Length: 405
Length: 234
Image 1: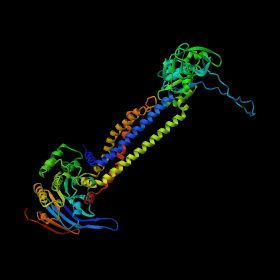
Image 2: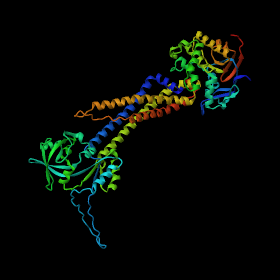
Image 3: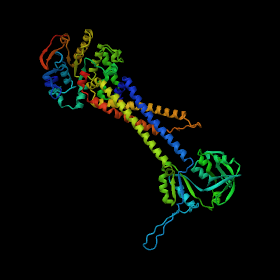
Image 4: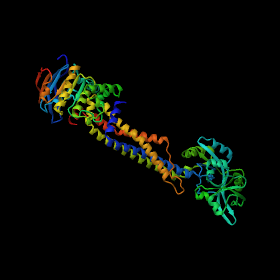
């Protein structure tokens, strides 16, 4: 064992209260860093998951037609009022080729074609306005995890089968196997059989979404073999905006990412991150000050011992390292205890705090990275905090402290 | 003196800075021969401890030279001084001499650990041997607070001898011991002096103990006023 560590251990063992105090400080610091990281991480991924549960990461649409003013012949200036033309749903040109391109893009894990438009769902005298979406069950489920949201029947849209939300099913008094008529504003319509009912936990989606086969939607919306949108899922949701920027020019389509559609949420997440970082920084500073002041006092109390160490052949450098070693030992022990405490606090919070459905409000997100980071910060902080006391100890003159100490 | 373990020449020491400067030593010359056992006497405030600190290189003189075995220590850097303190000089202090955080054995091992920079199993054996020599091997695991004053001072003697020093400096080593313990500790010092030929410089107020030394040096107001051999056989 190095001499410095041996002396540091003896000093720490002897100064029981002081050691306990700085250990507690380091432990609480590490625990708070871990807990806050887990809390913010858990809350954010819950929020993002909720937001993304019924939203694709990326949506590709055909660009809108823009009316242009024809430049007049000659030099005369003109003043024109340009009105936007009302547009009917138009198909993405050569969509199988575009879909293949999107699917082949690195960072995209799934893409699905959809034919979307508005329609009325009618049963007996009751009629509701709905958002009609023609999908392929498999590819749609890969982009938006709907299969696990099914509460009755199953996700099957073959022929004239339809999948609807719980709210619409309730409004129209429908169950699996019941019939429903879908009609577009242009008057095309057909009768469908309910094959499944989903619940996204979102009233708007549960009331409005009506899922039919791509073929049926194409017929109802008069799209022939076309589709209106391609929806895609990114491996990393937070890369969606970058992927949108990359794929826009390559596909010549309008690409929206969930990030631009939920800018407010992202701002909230960013400020949450900033405030978490600020809290953690202040915790680190408070712990550092605590360790520095306790070690500083201990240097003064141990002036005599430092004099004896120097008189018995201990170099100034070794004395400095004794106090740095004290800091490092406190940091390491505090990290271990803090990791346990932080993990325990996070776990307890996840278990004890639940929403009315009995689900945890706070899924614990604790990777090894969090522990390593918090421990690294704690050890570095403890050593840094012991620099000033160590330098003070080094400056002590052995003759002076032995005589007056 | 050609065969001097220690020699100081014209040593001056000032304390304080700016306007208030106190001159503690006014040009002291002293040489200690190998194996000599010298008592340093003088009233309090005469500069005995200051002289001891200078000789032990715990402090540097304002002027003058300190030579150890002919080597001028004024030219040594911090590292060399530290090694010199550890290997050549052993200290025995009057009060506060042991580290309260360490047990007796660890206190004796302290100079060895400081010299090697780490813990070594062989050190324990060596330290235990020294404790046996001072008759404390059975109390090796006691803390200083669990030892009597005389026992503490014997541990300090063992520690001072741990590195096999050429010179042992003792600042009133028996100052706060009862007569019996004082005699015991003093006898121990003389025994090591005789057996290993270690040079001793012992500060004492006690004329009875000074009388048992080879030589008596008296310091008054920072000047040596008497330096006489004491040939009484002990």
